[in-house]
Image (cartoon, rainbow, N blue to C red; front, side, top):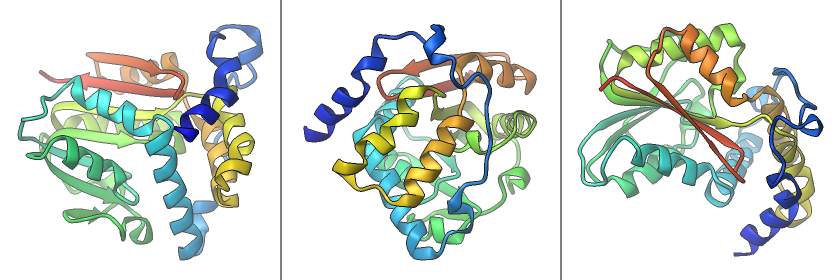
Length: 243
């Protein structure tokens, strides 16, 4: 409850503003800069991943993922899902709790990040996935695509979509001043690590606006796309169905 109150206090002034208004055009384009996690020692990486789990649990990451999955699957269904860029596996844990009959495979290229994830898990490069087309019912990329250039995102979307039998699911950040300011403003209450503060703000600057993500999916040859913005979480969800 305290987390919700603090979140509302910090972000309420921004919730009533629309993205198109001039004050919120502070970040007109994506800016991709290096993140500290890419070269962080194991202990620093683990603390950062723990912070990310807290952020997802309390501030909209998990609720966005839950709503996105609920739009394509029923809770009693059996299905397979590949989570690309799974890191510590908190998304897979949530999916298994919500969908007890689901089979979730975590994939990441960093063995330290993936060490806390449960089996099955795969160490692999997202640009060279070891799977044939249609290998999984769903392919999920959560908080992953914003790390890459537009050209790379287009390539990844096309690849991920080909591997999915039923739908590609993307959950990512919305580029907006509110989430950019949230981590430093909330630090006195939650004591995020310095790595989390740095990489979180870098990630918001590299994130998407809804029209940008829609445009990139069209460039990837994906025709049937639904995009939803989740506020006040400032997350974007994309669903690309095949059937």
